[in-house]
Image (cartoon, rainbow, N blue to C red; front, top):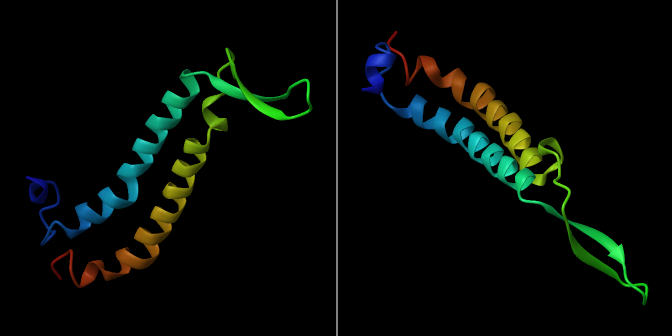
Length: 97
């Protein structure tokens, strides 16, 4: 089925590489969206001066979650990996000369 999308491609390696480089970004963004909708915990000091985490009704914005930053990192390093390390090999493996 996928070979019909790229008829000059000889194998599924390119699609597997693209999936490993870019699909996890969508997964991380989904978890970031869920984290932004589920409330948050806030650090406060109690009467003894200790820092405690208490639930807050305020939601954390989507772009301030750790999952969002992980998605950005995965996108950056996945793109770097694909375009600098895998793509130059396309003339040998993925496409017919």
